Amino acid sequence: MIDRQMKARADKGFPIEDKLLTCIDCGRDFVFTAGETRFYLSKGLTLYPKRCPECRRKRRLTINREGNQYKNIYEILREAREEIRRW
Image (cartoon, rainbow, N blue to C red; front, side):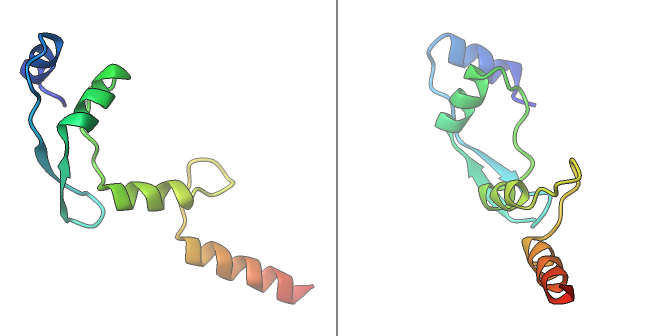
């Protein structure tokens, strides 16, 4: 969660600092910049992201048509090729 102190500092115009986070998917560290923090706060978001930008992008790209289920893009392509071959 974005700390209350950081939000209060941002509201008063003080600089916000970059934060080092760890991705829950790949385990790599990534920097959540002050600009990203300001953007999140401006949208009313109070949680830090759990995934690095690359994993967030991959997750968005692999949404399955069945709702909130996620698949690897390669699995989706393989299944599509198999369906085409059956025709």
